[in-house]
Structures are given as C-alpha cells and as structure tokens.
Image (cartoon, rainbow, N blue to C red; front, side):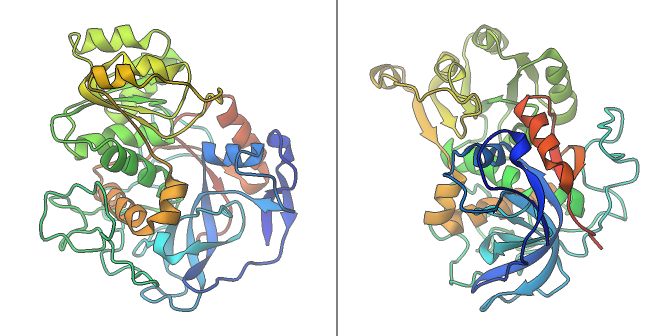
Length: 407
C-alpha cells in the first residue's frame, strides 16, 4: 500500500510517500480502505517526536474514513464494503489501508463519497461556498444508529461513562437515543469526506466539554483556537449541550471573522489581550468554562476570565512552551477548577467512555446540529504541505488528505 510515513522526527519534510505491506486486522479490529484522513495537530506532535521516536517507517493519522476491507476475529455488526469513520489511537490514517479498533469505528449508513452540491472545490477554501460537509437534502445520508458495531470485549457503551449529557433517561446504552440518534434531532448525514475529519475532533470536543469541563445548561464558554478543527465544532457542541454564550480567541483578525461567520460564536477576539475583551463582553463576570489547547501564556491568562466556580479545561499544548508551575492557593481561593483531557489516555483506560462521547458527538453532526467545515484537501503525497499549513498556523477549519478511491 502507499503511505505517507516518516522514520526520523523533524519538520514536515520528513514525511515521504512510501510503499508498505498491507496491515491485517487482529481480534477486535477492522481493516479500513481509507478514503480520507483528517489532518490534526496531534499528527504534527507525532512527527516531531512528542509520542516517542519512530521505530522504522511510521504512519501517523489519528482519524480516517473509508470502506471496511476486512474484519478481525470477534467483530460483528458491520460488513466488508460498509462506509465507516474511525478514531485511530495508534495512528495509521495516512495510508491506503488502516487498522482501527472496532470500539472506535462508526458506520456511516450508505455514505456518499462526495461533498454536497456547491461544496469545496479542490483545495480552494472558497469562503463563499455553503459551509460544512453535510448534505441537508435528499442526498444527505444518516449516521448508522445504535446497532452499529457491538463492542468485541463486551464493553457496554455507558460503562465508566462520564459526561454524556442526554436529558433522556431512556437513552440506549451505546450512546444513541432509541429513536433518531440524538434526542429531538432528525439525522441528515455525513459524507465520507466530512467523516474523514470527524472522529477525532468531534470526540475530543465533546469529551472536553461534557467530560472534563462538565458543561451544564446556562453555562458560558470561551474556546481558544476557535478557528481550528476542535475549535470549529466546540462552540456548536457547547450550545447543543446547553451553553447560552460562546466566545473564542484566534491569532489573527481574519481568523476571527471566519470563526464568527462559520461556527456561531457570539464574539471572537484576537488572542492578544483577550482577558480584557472577554470581561468587557460579559460585563465583568467572565465565563464558566475555558477550553485551552494552546498553553503558556494563554493558560495563566485564562484564569483571569473565569467566573465563580469556573473551569479551565486543558487539552493540548500547541504553543509548545515548557510546562507551567501554577500555584494552587489562588485556584482554591477564587473557586476555580483546572481540569484536563487526553483522548489517548482515556481511550486506553476507559474506551467505553470515549466511544460514548464519539457516538453522542457524531449523532449531533449527522443531525446537522454540528457542522464540520472542511476547507483544504491535499493528496496523500502532499501530506508534508498539509503539515506545513497547520504548523504555520495558516489553517482554518479542517484539513483532509484524499487518500484513496472512496467508491
């Protein structure tokens, strides 16, 4: 198979197109013929060596969509040829074939290979096109419902589940409601292109909000990196979970306008001097939740805008600063909370929790309540250019690699 791989850590140039043996699924795993792979900051960290040194040719890629090519032992509820999206905790998405845990693989019933009419043309990122990757008419295709992929190890959906707010006591145990997949919402669908950019960012945003930050109805939220992949869906998910106001910060005025227009933020501020802007917008109260994937100096400044009993939820270190030494006493004295989210760790120790978060978030996306804006598409051979775009902070919304034939 063709893959974009690296065998030494370094800049984007270490990614090269290589030929590797096709992988085979083990027990509880699914082999996916990849159509699209999302491009995320976690893959930049992988390439830079934050996850350890590579052992030979290493393929990154933490989310992908495509067709089931083979099933490992014990996997039922899905057939060869079915369209799926998957979170890939061990990477592998930047290749024509990827192995995914069945627990983190989610069928897309009858998914189309094409974006909606009037959608993205190549990698132009036309700001005037219809936003999002779902097709809201007859061509829209529903996310597979609760029967999709029972867990091969017997995990029961809500086991060790933290934070999946549903407001529905009759909710089915795998994370979908007993009717449409999200209470009160009619599914409209995800195409394969959008689904390739969905599994990691939706699950992360939902997990940070519902699991780590414990968002509640009436909360107000501030999201750093509001124009990126997770930031783009975070405001929408926050509102779906009951938040009443959503603010964001970004690095440039252009990104601020994009995030306001595309994702429904009440206001988006350039990150420099954001505390004053947030406090002014909230009449001095501040916000209940701050989501921070950036790090120092954004992190200590975020405490300044927390309302009483406010929560700062940390889920990334995009600024790549050294770790902070934070005093605990001011956190206690000002009734604040510092919490964290790491999908990799949670996936290892509590896979049912991650699955429940993913199912809830994907159901909202399939319903049309949450939109993913795929703005850039690169060929697999151009993965280095996609990494360069993200690494230089020039990206907006989601970037995908077109890996293989989605038919």
